[in-house]
Image (cartoon, rainbow, N blue to C red; front, side, top):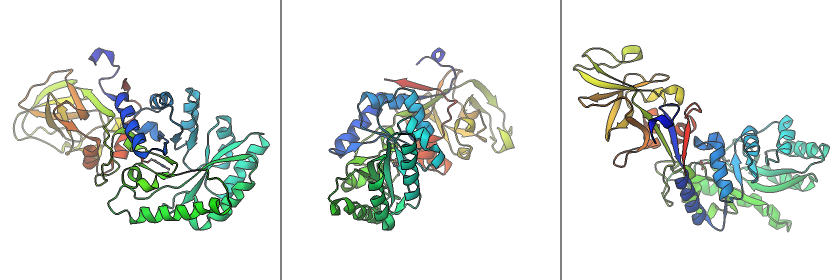
Length: 374
Ligand SMILES: *Cc1c(COP(=O)(O)O)cnc(C)c1O
């Protein structure tokens, strides 16, 4: 991409071809289970609408988001696939779910009843997935209290129970004991349907970690998030499916200078050199989601080499030490991505920032333009 095509010298590039390949690899791995791509938090930084359009084209059966606003945006952009909103919600939000044909997560008997009553009043059918808490202790009816919840769901005449689901707490770790326990608890809950000779709603529990490590948990549908975007949920997870990162983060040099010995760099004057160095300034900072906590650790790729960032990362700009090398205004700087020879991964940024790759991806601010490669 040439410089004059972009508004800002800093942008995120999304490779939609790789996203499609990652999706197809997951789909093949879990078949005959279906796949519900998870698109919350701006599709893990990849851009909600364009990513949803790709999945609509690929005729996926479901999409998952976290909050109702994400679902509304998808409907307003012409996405017709069933959409499940995974997060907790308040009773006064129910009409907006109904208006936009979004499936709700019913996380308690009270919520379920409220959903059914609202649907009755509005003369509509509500769509829900029953949420069972098998050990995450976030939302959902505890597995040991679920019988009454499932019974009540049969009495809701204005509600279609599309699915029943739960969520794992540590499916991406080496020790899968707790994950297995959660799966057993979920199976126990599901016996209700067999016992009452009722058909199962769609059963689902697997996130990226479980898709990689617990094929026995695939059930009817799986819910991959981070894996779709080519990033593994943890360092220790077994890489049983090969995926490639879809997102690169790039910027360009906007300033070059020499810095004298003992002349400190950036806020707080936390870094200085004892000899002359050359340095470049790059227009990206923590206001874009390039975390300040990576100061004094982060590196970037420039002209085929890795260079360290010096001084504090500021809101909008960073300074890169190129020592004796040369660089010019307009040179490409890779923050996340590969130049063919070297690579900087979002896992690496997570390590520098003391966080997990999820937080790196979902914090790349919307002020960073997204550019798509088909
Ligand atoms: C975020 C989320 C997922 C996807 O998790 P990944 O680890 O990114 O695969 C699946 N299900 C629920 C309920 C979630 O909140």
